[in-house]
Image (tube, rainbow over all chains, first blue to last red; front, side, top):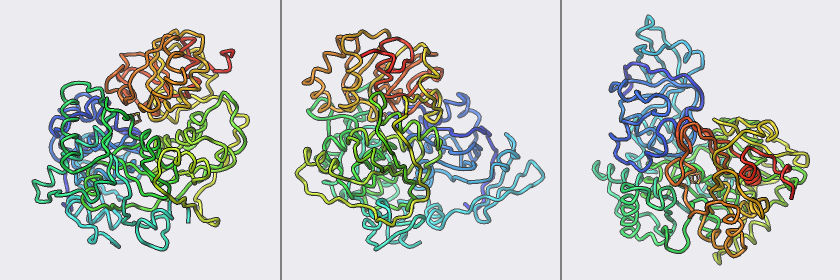
Length: 170
Length: 424
Ligand code: SF4
């Protein structure tokens, strides 16, 4: 899980909130595949049709702000998205993505976001905290390393696979 | 240490903690509702398939459950979710399940204080982002997602990164036509929707010392819109008497240290403040109500954990009394107990006489789920807390966020109106 490769879907705007990622009317749905059909519906009704398994999402600052609905990372992950690349994430979205083991929140600089184009093929290298842009001549960009605790949870595939004592004083 | 640091240190069994530390804190109270509850149950089922089965909840007496988002059952799926939730609480011995249509029930955050379910100094986690609300009681109150809540049900503890605390000192006195809602909208307008991200927002100052519990709760409620991990207010005699009217369970008030470190301190002078409105499509897109007055509206909404507490209803009723609304107006008290008080105080009569619909406590329209969602291009003025695209209905609808006074004034004139322009 140290290297992932996929295509970037770029929706570069700030504050993409959970009402956009999965609108309130779908909160009663708990079937993951059904939720995936409505992922990002507030921004692009065709989204789920455009995404293939293993793709990435690239967005602006404060991605996932708004509600605590875990439907948001679930809908994205089940539509095929494996990582979200953004300058910053809202805290509950970040936790949900990691603790639920759904997808990777990758923090990068604003300049990196501007350089990567919609449709670029990217390698996400979490071991070396880098992105490699295959489409743009293997140009590489730094990503913010995961804090130790987050890295441990990601490695375990979600919080459930760890008892509290395995996490205290990480 | 600040109050938040002290509570997290105690929860983690440490003498002290500092911002940035990651701690595992013991949880004192846990809440889930009819959206997060079934979500958590689904996570528990997934985990069971992977070999981790929840046999018992770490402490059933510390867990409480509400039905608020999709009640009255909006459709067959919602009805099924409530059955799933009820079966689960029964099976795991959760006694505090507040059921729609069975005595006291209401919006989760409103019940947290109305029923004194959370007490000062506690670590409280809820399966809802506005769990921050309850921090006004002097507790550490933070929202979590389904997996985290499921983890707490297993282990009774969860990780937190200790947040730095931003202190907002509120000075002076609020003019009669200005409410806590205006104050928090102004703060969010100043610091932005990311201004509190990962941080604690604490409120203090002589304006807080005088402020009622319900108004304080409006402040902490919307710390979520600034992205904050939690909002908090140090408990005082107002907190104590509010809680003692509602519970016999003894509690101790924890305060921050005199020499606590705050990452930022912001001062606000309230004497000169006027009503504030957040325009579509962000709670931070604020302006003076005068800048948008005259905007024609299709609906006025007085509801939600932010703006349908008893004092919110009282404020609105001051303007509705003896007048008629010009646009469709819905008033939904945030809990059954508030509905009952509003009835006994004659507020319900005032609303109904003014032409409003008074509905049952529910999140319904606040999150665009049911019970009065907005159609394409409709414009709403609302006492709720969010106005992102599509929040209250159609993606092309627009919501202005405002205080109950501004919403009532606007309902009466059919366009956005400063309450000072309605002569009382
Ligand atoms: S009233 Fe609105 S903000 Fe409050 S809990 Fe319900 S949906 Fe969330």
